[in-house]
Length: 267
Image 1 (cartoon, helix red, strand yellow):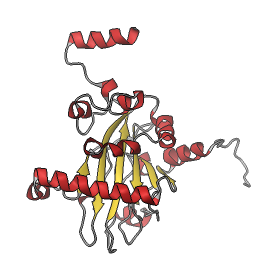
Image 2 (image 1 turned 180 degrees about the vertical axis):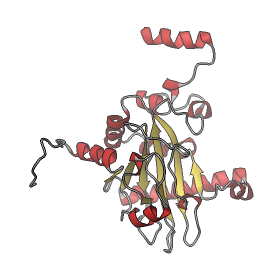
Image 3 (image 1 turned 120 degrees about the vertical axis):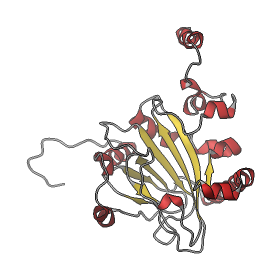
Image 4 (image 1 turned 60 degrees about the vertical axis):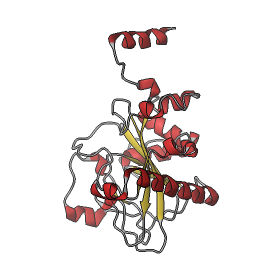
């Protein structure tokens, strides 16, 4: 490209470099066609099954009271197939390039956006809420799988680019004038800095919009639900799951436990 007065440019050598630059500068990147149509349909059905099970267990009225309708939490704890969406090697390369070698899964939620029905996620927010400061490097990354088309009609995700670079939210006018709504297909994945302001759109179509939101964070941030305690030792058979699910970073329960953990690292 033509230029003058610029001494150097950031170098892009691989496709992953472009994704990382997108996340660090504008706050998000898009990976096209990560899941097949068959897998999108399979996971959409599984989200609905998990949600219906959780709704029956907790009660629809109770979910309504705490604003939890149409959200299926910790999907992998109900159906181990969802573990495949947190161990994708290509995506984890992006996550580890930004967060470093050590990171954990903070949450995995299924989002159901039904036609002509407002979802609580239509409010602007950061996925680490109430944080009004910025960091020199991200400590939390969202990996959102679109299992159905995400667009203006289906209530696709709206994003405010570059908002991770500012401590506090801008004016409502700025949101209206600068928010974007990417046109995404079933199987696409949007990866974004969790400090980016975003929200779900309003679904005016005749289809149910399904998505899976994985939030990876530095271990210094606690999990939404204590996953190791919830799983009671399940899924520790592979090093990557042992790390991502948080077993590696459990808080010691005593001085003896603290010292034994350190001792095991030295062996």
